[in-house]
Amino acid sequence: MKKALCYSVALSTSLLFGCASSPNISYNYSGNTVTYSTPSNEQISTAYVGDSILRQDIYKEVEALNLQSPVKYGLYHFPSGNYEKIGNDDKYNFFEPLSTEETGAALNQEGNARIYVQAIAVEKGSSAQICPIHAISGMACLNAKFNVEKTKSKKGTSFEQALIYNGTTGSKINVGYREFANETARPAYNNRVEYDLTKSKSISYKGAEIMVIEADNNAITYKVISPFHSK
Image (tube, rainbow, N blue to C red; front, side):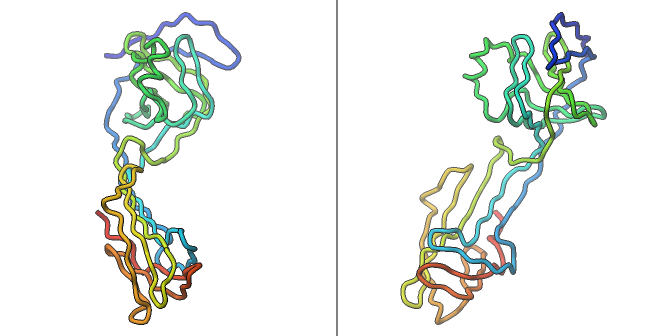
């Protein structure tokens, strides 16, 4: 059911409140899974000892409302930062009322006022106003500096793999393997491997294949033939 808004507020030069009927919030957005590898295939690259030779990240990419400066009205305070998208309808995009940097504790310090804000609506094509939707009072629109951009979700799962160059021992090169889940290292999956370049200039690990052009105890020059197998 749509609610009509009727706020009594003092206008300022920085905020302009508008009245609007409150739309039904749509929860129909989940983002996309992205696999990003660097460097790209066939690119000739150089890495030094301790640098990554190959890094691959699998994560959820979402649209987010990026507030470039804080927005305040009454008891409500929306800090600058990213607010992830939760849905859309024909007229509005809907975003979470908490930024990805906020916590429940931070919200409680504001006197629990914002727990009644269900979403932030932004009219499609708008670049000047955000419209918080209050569970009781409905929707108010406020002037704000923002853009909508794609970003790595902090609420979705992520998985990262990396090969690290550890130098040479004679004709052998030493490579470390690292895994991270949700940006936390997984030590049980770390490993070190050696490759004898007199036998092959190609090294492979977990589906990744790298052609070594030149390597010594300071740096390696190489190109990626194929990245890690996606999980």
